[in-house]
Image (cartoon, rainbow, N blue to C red; front, side, top):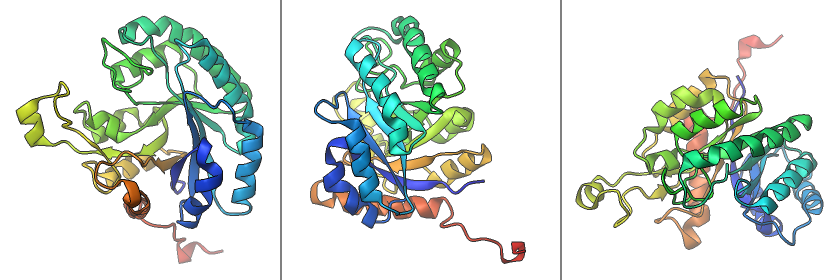
Length: 293
Protein backbone atom coordinates (compact mmCIF):
# COMPACT_ATOMS: atom_id res chain seq x y z
CA UNK A 1 0.00 0.00 0.00
CA UNK A 2 1.42 3.37 -1.03
CA UNK A 3 0.75 6.68 0.69
CA UNK A 4 -1.44 8.82 -1.53
CA UNK A 5 0.02 12.28 -2.08
CA UNK A 6 -2.07 15.43 -1.83
CA UNK A 7 -1.35 18.05 -4.45
CA UNK A 8 -2.85 20.99 -6.25
CA UNK A 9 -3.68 22.08 -9.80
CA UNK A 10 -1.60 24.83 -11.39
CA UNK A 11 -2.61 26.40 -14.71
CA UNK A 12 0.22 26.10 -17.21
CA UNK A 13 0.03 29.84 -17.81
CA UNK A 14 0.71 30.49 -14.09
CA UNK A 15 3.50 27.99 -13.35
CA UNK A 16 6.23 30.60 -12.93
CA UNK A 17 4.05 32.85 -10.79
CA UNK A 18 2.11 30.37 -8.65
CA UNK A 19 4.02 27.10 -8.34
CA UNK A 20 6.76 28.22 -5.90
CA UNK A 21 4.17 29.44 -3.39
CA UNK A 22 2.11 26.28 -3.77
CA UNK A 23 5.13 24.14 -3.00
CA UNK A 24 6.06 26.35 -0.03
CA UNK A 25 2.53 25.76 1.31
CA UNK A 26 3.28 22.05 1.58
CA UNK A 27 1.55 20.44 -1.39
CA UNK A 28 3.17 17.09 -2.10
CA UNK A 29 2.58 16.99 -5.86
CA UNK A 30 0.88 19.06 -8.53
CA UNK A 31 -0.89 18.94 -11.87
CA UNK A 32 0.08 21.30 -14.68
CA UNK A 33 -2.94 21.93 -16.88
CA UNK A 34 -4.26 23.83 -19.88
CA UNK A 35 -7.89 24.31 -20.87
CA UNK A 36 -8.67 24.02 -24.60
CA UNK A 37 -5.48 25.80 -25.71
CA UNK A 38 -1.80 26.06 -24.92
CA UNK A 39 -1.12 28.43 -27.80
CA UNK A 40 1.97 30.51 -27.22
CA UNK A 41 3.53 28.05 -24.80
CA UNK A 42 6.58 25.96 -25.60
CA UNK A 43 5.83 22.82 -23.60
CA UNK A 44 9.41 21.43 -23.52
CA UNK A 45 10.57 24.83 -22.25
CA UNK A 46 7.78 24.80 -19.66
CA UNK A 47 8.98 21.38 -18.51
CA UNK A 48 12.42 22.89 -17.89
CA UNK A 49 10.82 25.71 -15.90
CA UNK A 50 8.96 23.17 -13.76
CA UNK A 51 12.16 21.22 -13.09
CA UNK A 52 13.97 24.42 -12.11
CA UNK A 53 11.25 25.40 -9.63
CA UNK A 54 11.03 21.92 -8.12
CA UNK A 55 14.84 21.60 -7.89
CA UNK A 56 15.31 18.81 -5.40
CA UNK A 57 12.03 19.14 -3.50
CA UNK A 58 10.31 15.82 -2.73
CA UNK A 59 7.37 16.57 -5.05
CA UNK A 60 6.27 15.23 -8.41
CA UNK A 61 4.15 16.23 -11.38
CA UNK A 62 1.07 14.04 -10.89
CA UNK A 63 -0.26 14.59 -14.40
CA UNK A 64 -0.02 16.92 -17.38
CA UNK A 65 -3.52 18.11 -18.25
CA UNK A 66 -4.85 19.32 -21.57
CA UNK A 67 -8.65 19.51 -21.35
CA UNK A 68 -9.94 19.68 -24.89
CA UNK A 69 -12.43 18.25 -27.38
CA UNK A 70 -10.53 15.76 -29.56
CA UNK A 71 -13.76 14.31 -30.97
CA UNK A 72 -15.08 17.48 -32.58
CA UNK A 73 -11.92 19.54 -33.03
CA UNK A 74 -9.10 18.05 -35.19
CA UNK A 75 -6.66 20.68 -33.89
CA UNK A 76 -7.33 19.56 -30.33
CA UNK A 77 -6.65 15.97 -31.37
CA UNK A 78 -3.28 16.93 -32.84
CA UNK A 79 -2.43 19.11 -29.85
CA UNK A 80 -3.28 16.26 -27.47
CA UNK A 81 -0.89 13.97 -29.34
CA UNK A 82 1.85 16.55 -28.78
CA UNK A 83 1.01 16.73 -25.06
CA UNK A 84 1.38 12.95 -24.87
CA UNK A 85 4.73 13.17 -26.63
CA UNK A 86 6.16 15.78 -24.24
CA UNK A 87 4.64 14.49 -20.97
CA UNK A 88 7.75 12.43 -20.06
CA UNK A 89 9.76 15.69 -20.05
CA UNK A 90 7.67 16.75 -17.03
CA UNK A 91 8.59 13.55 -15.19
CA UNK A 92 5.01 12.29 -15.14
CA UNK A 93 3.50 9.04 -16.35
CA UNK A 94 0.02 10.50 -16.89
CA UNK A 95 -1.89 12.81 -19.23
CA UNK A 96 -5.33 14.16 -18.32
CA UNK A 97 -7.98 15.30 -20.79
CA UNK A 98 -11.65 15.29 -21.74
CA UNK A 99 -13.24 12.60 -23.86
CA UNK A 100 -14.64 15.23 -26.21
CA UNK A 101 -18.16 15.43 -27.61
CA UNK A 102 -20.25 16.55 -30.52
CA UNK A 103 -21.52 19.67 -28.83
CA UNK A 104 -25.30 19.87 -28.61
CA UNK A 105 -25.78 16.24 -29.65
CA UNK A 106 -26.44 13.10 -27.59
CA UNK A 107 -23.59 11.28 -25.87
CA UNK A 108 -24.27 8.09 -27.84
CA UNK A 109 -23.57 9.75 -31.19
CA UNK A 110 -19.97 10.46 -30.19
CA UNK A 111 -19.05 6.88 -29.31
CA UNK A 112 -17.83 5.75 -32.78
CA UNK A 113 -15.54 8.77 -33.00
CA UNK A 114 -14.44 8.28 -29.39
CA UNK A 115 -13.36 4.75 -30.28
CA UNK A 116 -11.39 5.95 -33.30
CA UNK A 117 -9.69 8.83 -31.48
CA UNK A 118 -8.86 7.15 -28.19
CA UNK A 119 -7.71 3.87 -29.69
CA UNK A 120 -4.96 5.88 -31.37
CA UNK A 121 -4.27 8.09 -28.35
CA UNK A 122 -4.07 5.16 -25.94
CA UNK A 123 -1.59 3.35 -28.16
CA UNK A 124 0.52 6.49 -28.46
CA UNK A 125 0.46 6.91 -24.68
CA UNK A 126 1.22 3.24 -24.02
CA UNK A 127 4.26 3.39 -26.31
CA UNK A 128 5.64 6.08 -23.98
CA UNK A 129 4.68 4.29 -20.76
CA UNK A 130 1.86 6.73 -20.02
CA UNK A 131 -1.60 6.40 -18.59
CA UNK A 132 -4.35 8.49 -20.18
CA UNK A 133 -7.09 9.72 -17.85
CA UNK A 134 -10.40 11.38 -18.68
CA UNK A 135 -12.02 13.80 -16.25
CA UNK A 136 -15.67 13.28 -15.35
CA UNK A 137 -16.68 16.93 -15.81
CA UNK A 138 -20.02 17.54 -17.60
CA UNK A 139 -19.03 21.05 -18.78
CA UNK A 140 -22.67 22.07 -18.47
CA UNK A 141 -23.86 19.34 -20.81
CA UNK A 142 -26.48 16.62 -20.47
CA UNK A 143 -26.92 13.19 -22.00
CA UNK A 144 -29.00 14.60 -24.85
CA UNK A 145 -26.98 17.83 -25.25
CA UNK A 146 -23.36 17.01 -24.49
CA UNK A 147 -20.76 19.78 -24.19
CA UNK A 148 -17.03 19.16 -24.72
CA UNK A 149 -16.95 15.95 -22.65
CA UNK A 150 -19.14 12.84 -22.76
CA UNK A 151 -17.37 11.21 -19.81
CA UNK A 152 -19.49 12.62 -16.99
CA UNK A 153 -21.75 9.65 -16.24
CA UNK A 154 -21.16 5.95 -15.49
CA UNK A 155 -23.38 4.92 -18.39
CA UNK A 156 -20.93 6.70 -20.69
CA UNK A 157 -17.97 5.05 -18.93
CA UNK A 158 -19.43 1.62 -19.60
CA UNK A 159 -19.69 2.47 -23.29
CA UNK A 160 -16.26 4.11 -23.44
CA UNK A 161 -14.31 1.29 -21.82
CA UNK A 162 -16.18 -1.26 -23.91
CA UNK A 163 -15.22 0.68 -27.06
CA UNK A 164 -11.59 1.17 -25.98
CA UNK A 165 -10.55 -1.61 -23.56
CA UNK A 166 -7.00 -0.29 -23.17
CA UNK A 167 -5.39 -0.97 -19.80
CA UNK A 168 -3.81 2.50 -19.73
CA UNK A 169 -7.14 4.31 -20.17
CA UNK A 170 -8.83 5.41 -16.96
CA UNK A 171 -10.70 8.13 -15.13
CA UNK A 172 -9.64 11.35 -13.48
CA UNK A 173 -12.46 11.18 -10.98
CA UNK A 174 -13.93 14.00 -8.95
CA UNK A 175 -16.75 13.60 -6.39
CA UNK A 176 -18.21 17.06 -7.02
CA UNK A 177 -19.16 16.22 -10.61
CA UNK A 178 -21.19 13.26 -9.38
CA UNK A 179 -22.89 15.16 -6.57
CA UNK A 180 -24.15 17.56 -9.24
CA UNK A 181 -25.97 14.56 -10.77
CA UNK A 182 -27.29 13.45 -7.34
CA UNK A 183 -25.06 10.36 -7.52
CA UNK A 184 -23.51 9.07 -4.30
CA UNK A 185 -19.76 9.39 -5.01
CA UNK A 186 -18.69 6.92 -2.32
CA UNK A 187 -20.92 4.14 -3.62
CA UNK A 188 -19.82 4.95 -7.16
CA UNK A 189 -16.15 4.73 -6.25
CA UNK A 190 -16.66 1.27 -4.74
CA UNK A 191 -17.66 0.09 -8.21
CA UNK A 192 -15.30 2.12 -10.36
CA UNK A 193 -12.11 2.29 -8.26
CA UNK A 194 -10.15 -0.09 -10.56
CA UNK A 195 -10.56 2.43 -13.38
CA UNK A 196 -9.77 5.52 -11.30
CA UNK A 197 -6.14 6.51 -11.90
CA UNK A 198 -6.16 10.07 -10.54
CA UNK A 199 -8.47 12.26 -8.45
CA UNK A 200 -9.31 15.93 -8.46
CA UNK A 201 -9.84 17.13 -4.92
CA UNK A 202 -13.06 19.02 -5.43
CA UNK A 203 -16.32 18.37 -3.62
CA UNK A 204 -19.90 19.57 -3.76
CA UNK A 205 -22.85 20.01 -1.48
CA UNK A 206 -26.55 19.49 -2.15
CA UNK A 207 -28.74 22.33 -0.93
CA UNK A 208 -31.89 20.36 -0.20
CA UNK A 209 -34.00 23.44 0.43
CA UNK A 210 -33.08 24.84 -2.99
CA UNK A 211 -33.62 21.42 -4.59
CA UNK A 212 -37.10 21.10 -3.08
CA UNK A 213 -38.13 24.61 -4.09
CA UNK A 214 -36.51 25.10 -7.51
CA UNK A 215 -35.70 21.59 -8.80
CA UNK A 216 -32.81 20.59 -11.04
CA UNK A 217 -33.27 22.53 -14.30
CA UNK A 218 -31.01 25.44 -13.50
CA UNK A 219 -33.20 28.14 -11.97
CA UNK A 220 -30.96 28.03 -8.89
CA UNK A 221 -27.70 26.21 -8.16
CA UNK A 222 -28.74 23.27 -5.98
CA UNK A 223 -25.30 21.60 -5.85
CA UNK A 224 -22.47 24.18 -5.73
CA UNK A 225 -18.89 23.00 -5.98
CA UNK A 226 -16.93 23.12 -2.73
CA UNK A 227 -13.35 22.73 -1.62
CA UNK A 228 -12.70 19.42 0.21
CA UNK A 229 -13.50 19.87 3.87
CA UNK A 230 -16.53 22.05 3.12
CA UNK A 231 -18.59 19.62 1.01
CA UNK A 232 -20.73 16.53 1.51
CA UNK A 233 -18.26 13.76 0.63
CA UNK A 234 -16.74 11.54 3.32
CA UNK A 235 -13.14 11.61 2.15
CA UNK A 236 -12.09 9.08 4.80
CA UNK A 237 -14.22 6.54 2.95
CA UNK A 238 -12.70 7.70 -0.35
CA UNK A 239 -9.16 6.97 0.86
CA UNK A 240 -10.15 3.64 2.40
CA UNK A 241 -11.71 2.49 -0.87
CA UNK A 242 -8.68 3.61 -2.86
CA UNK A 243 -6.34 1.69 -0.57
CA UNK A 244 -8.56 -1.40 -0.72
CA UNK A 245 -8.07 -1.36 -4.49
CA UNK A 246 -4.29 -0.75 -4.34
CA UNK A 247 -4.63 2.68 -5.90
CA UNK A 248 -1.43 4.10 -7.35
CA UNK A 249 -1.86 7.81 -7.93
CA UNK A 250 -2.45 11.18 -6.32
CA UNK A 251 -5.23 13.57 -5.31
CA UNK A 252 -4.82 17.13 -6.59
CA UNK A 253 -6.98 19.82 -5.02
CA UNK A 254 -8.80 21.75 -7.72
CA UNK A 255 -9.50 25.15 -6.29
CA UNK A 256 -10.94 28.28 -7.90
CA UNK A 257 -14.58 27.08 -7.84
CA UNK A 258 -15.77 27.41 -4.23
CA UNK A 259 -18.52 30.08 -4.04
CA UNK A 260 -17.64 30.90 -0.42
CA UNK A 261 -13.85 30.68 -0.19
CA UNK A 262 -12.87 32.68 -3.25
CA UNK A 263 -10.84 35.73 -4.13
CA UNK A 264 -8.33 36.51 -1.38
CA UNK A 265 -9.56 33.43 0.56
CA UNK A 266 -8.64 31.02 -2.22
CA UNK A 267 -5.29 29.91 -0.79
CA UNK A 268 -6.79 29.62 2.68
CA UNK A 269 -9.31 27.12 1.32
CA UNK A 270 -6.71 25.15 -0.61
CA UNK A 271 -4.34 24.80 2.33
CA UNK A 272 -7.28 23.80 4.52
CA UNK A 273 -8.10 21.12 1.94
CA UNK A 274 -4.48 19.95 2.01
CA UNK A 275 -4.53 19.45 5.78
CA UNK A 276 -8.03 17.98 5.75
CA UNK A 277 -7.21 15.43 3.05
CA UNK A 278 -3.96 14.47 4.78
CA UNK A 279 -5.99 13.83 7.93
CA UNK A 280 -8.55 11.79 5.99
CA UNK A 281 -5.83 9.57 4.52
CA UNK A 282 -4.54 8.87 8.04
CA UNK A 283 -1.84 11.52 8.28
CA UNK A 284 1.75 10.82 7.27
CA UNK A 285 3.19 7.34 7.03
CA UNK A 286 4.85 6.17 10.26
CA UNK A 287 6.90 2.94 10.05
CA UNK A 288 6.35 0.25 12.64
CA UNK A 289 9.24 0.22 15.13
CA UNK A 290 9.03 -3.57 15.27
CA UNK A 291 9.65 -3.83 11.52
CA UNK A 292 13.22 -2.59 11.86
CA UNK A 293 15.85 -5.10 10.86
